[in-house]
Amino acid sequence: NQEHHGIMAPLIKHLLALAPPSLFIIVIILSVWSQSQSVAWYLDLDELADGEALPMVNGTLTAVKNDTDAALLLHRSDSLYKYNISTAPIVIEKYKLLLFTIEKTGSTVLKQLMRRLMGYENYYYHGKGIPHVFPKNGLKMLVDYSLPEANEMLTSDKWTRAMFVRDPKERLLSGYLMWRPKKNFSEETLRNAQKGLLNETLVNGTSTNFNRGLIKCCIDRAKGDYNYEVLCLNHMLSFEGFLGMVEDPNKIDDGNANDEGLGSHQPKNTTKWSPHNLRKSPSCPDKHWSPVTQWRMEKQFYPQLNFIGHLETAKYDIKRLLNRMHPDAWEMYGASGWGEHRNESMFESTTTVLHAKKTENYLSEHYTSDEIEKRVEEINEDDYDNTFLDLERVPVGQAQSFYRKRFLQRFGSFE
Image 1 (cartoon, rainbow, N blue to C red):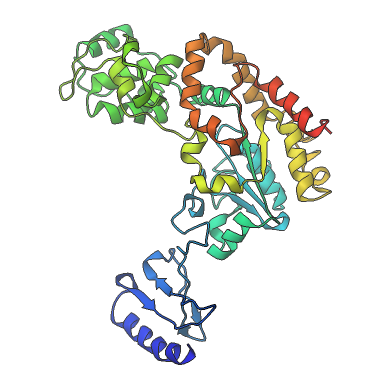
Image 2 (cartoon, rainbow, N blue to C red):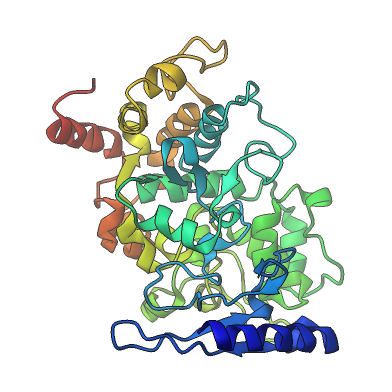
């Protein structure tokens, strides 16, 4: 009550003056009679974000409601409420839009659109961290708002919470094509590695032009064994070898072990390495190919999505999204101003569309058997089973036609 608050406030200010705030969790119990319940309030000073001011009113520290209250959907510790270019939703307050982007699913052009919605004339610029890196891109994230405001955005019917998804088989292949090793080791190097003769690393971006993502995966598993580093990356030159690094090792059939290029090298500080042992090691996660459900956000947030678009029908879904935001939004932001000469509509022939078509051309080259397709379906099982992502187990090469047909069934036309 007011009397207790008047007594406690000077005491709290005195305690704060005696010791660093990080040593305290100051508990204020206010006796409040409301609907026959007592309400507890507290201020956890350790939970304050860097640079966040203490809640003061007229120079007096005030009580803050427990942000872990079960009534709140979003908490300060959740991934959506962090400064992270991959997981932080983008906020367009003017149109009450939250956009959840996904790597290898048109994220670049979608963030360019968000910059256009924010009024940036150079919305199309791509370089030096733009449009992906905060705060360079000038976009607002969910963490830029207070927890009550952020929770309102995540739960209110007035807000659109949109995500674009992609056929998992094409997305995983796209990630592989982007991050796969770019250069072969010589036959002599491979023979020396199989014999355990290498005593210095040959795995670095400068000498072999390998991408850092897969390098880290192999280095982590080699544990200082330079021979294994080389054999590991050579193993991932093939799509099947790559799949062996991203599969859940607990779901691998022991009867499928075979020699795929690692030989019988015996590392000094580990047991025998083979393709089978490699596949049985912890999987190699990355946001460019790992199932969305495993990294994008905590599972309790997926039911809050109220708009799902598909990369396969992005040209039409983006129009639906903009029209949902405002009757004039498509004409203002989507119908023109895109393409190399800025005279096309969004997703008509952007780099994203070209990348997607390039991946389609590689499908038959890499999905060479039903077994490979089955393995990829098992890798992405969580995404297929996440009904909020609206994905289907579509045969390889048929995603474009499948989702276009389904779009027509749902919405009647492409207009």
